[in-house]
Length: 77
Image (cartoon, rainbow, N blue to C red; front, side):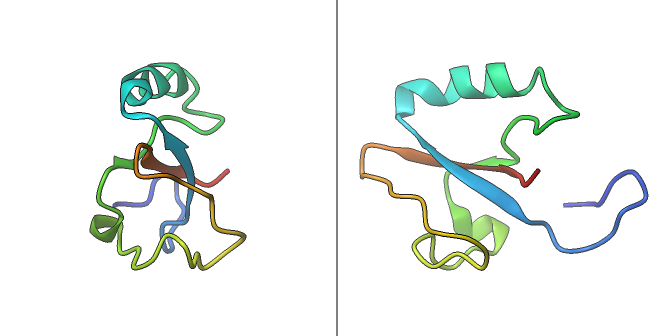
């Protein structure tokens, strides 16, 4: 992902679990606030973002999830 607004560096994301039925609504709501956090940059396979293990994050604590949840990642605020 390309850096924007003059910043450069690695992409750091926060992660939130959503039920499959809630993913579209979460994107609809968060996309209205691009200056605060914005919509997810990815939903689904975390390996596509270079995330090897969601249970061992580089920063902070792991976010509990269940097999019925989808994990979405958005830019860290």
